Image (cartoon, rainbow, N blue to C red; front, side, top):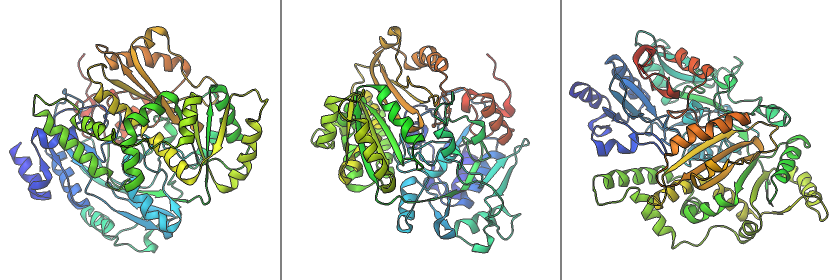
Length: 571
């Protein structure tokens, strides 16, 4: 161990190689799920350092576990307990910032540490936007992590994160690391990996070196057609869709990705937000179907919250909303690191309760007023189901009169709508995005009266009218709280469940929830990858094996074997 740690320190500096339990805790512990031991956490500061660290780890017979922002919900970028047959070197890419514009911003090249906030900020002066904004369930998510995990997003017109243009390191069956340039950019000394990586990081290439003609996609351009097919008995998007697995896209840490190239999109001007409430699920489904089929243009976003999720987000996420409202998302990665450090420190003190950071933040949030606008709060009192709809100014001129007619007196629907002010629209979507973190906070605060939580993100059939589940009594009896929110127009639901004391949430999920979802024809996970929680279907397992024939990178992902060369584990 001492030898490789010293070698790693010689590459990145002693301060960027962490080995103690406390120093590595924030990297070893997943955002919601997963933890384990590592030999070292290494934080390279350049692409060349990333290459050298990866090469050292691979050639010494170590497992390499790549990690971006560590905001995943299924433990896909953290160790999964014990059972590994080799030591683990976890490589964090958080220092590897960098975004380069191509074609006046029509496309971007993102380095491993670039996050969605930085990309959004970079594109804003150009009047363009990235594939996703903020992060649908985990604020502070990285761009490359989204591509690597086939993450979804809230923006209806853009589909899951996807590209066929990437620069990555791949380990062959003999355990040798090779650089593969499918980025569509030519570099001098293409056969020298470090030369290519250094040139890319410092932008040493010209516009003439960028190939625009090879036909490789930089986003999922067929999604708008799939999502309009509302009578299809299959999901419109889900993580294991074979049509969205291509090299770096959906690699789940089975490659060492140095850069991805992505399309950007014209920013919508003069947008409008409509807030819709109803006590009938079929009312919202009628709205969904009409919006997806009746107009030439699709909405920008359509986010759903159930009344209970609304309340929990207000009670346990208002500090998150306030932070983003007044400071933006720029400081959130720092806040997450401070939170991880505090929890790591607290674990060393037996008299300090678990989840100290959440307890302190919840205490502080009591002094904050509710961030929910008055009209939204009024709808919370009236309606079980809430839909936030963002559309362009052009589409608003068509949707506005249709909604008035649809909810007119005498119509056989129960509900209503109002058009948000700019401030109300912003707060409505921030409130929705705070819901996932609020569920975590609730469990931390009520640790003595709950048994933990399980989080599912589910892709429903596009023709499913019964989109809100009805749980059997034997399942409901195991639960304290059920929280439903999600990307409604895409029929992707996030479903969080807090279980009663003494109940094993994973056991309930595996034995009760998964069979119910299978019976409904749903696919799961929908957008957060299988991680170490779900079994990868065969198409996904085959993708992993083709990318990593020696099983040297992130072994065990998708409940596959953790052993070298994909040797089956003994039962």
